[in-house]
Picture 1 (cartoon, helix red, strand yellow):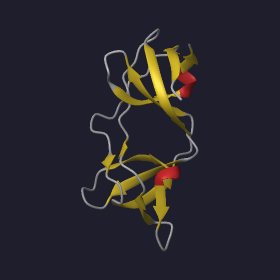
Picture 2 (picture 1 turned 45 degrees about the vertical axis):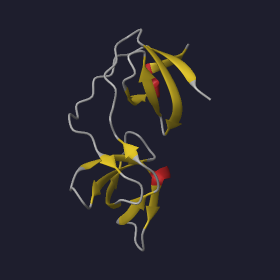
Picture 3 (picture 1 turned 120 degrees about the vertical axis):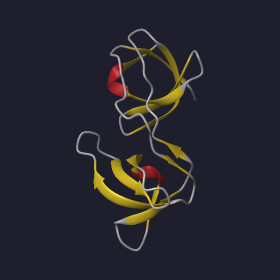
Length: 116
């Protein structure tokens, strides 16, 4: 079920080229994120691109240093300002996948949002 949010604190992503992964794509698992538990820094085996992915979509391999993703995934974050209106259909580990009124999509920290 979709939730409606109002942005209470602006979020301006610093990463210009976010990680994109395809279902079943192989990854190296580098480290867990201390600021946002449940997120891990990964590196795509095919492209070498690094970024954070939620643990929930990782199928670990024989060891904890590699695995595959269980669904298509984008690490794109939304650039949003206070009072922007957003819709979300997914929340993971303190972040919400949101869509703006202009139909731009990406992740926003839940701490920057208030339910409308």
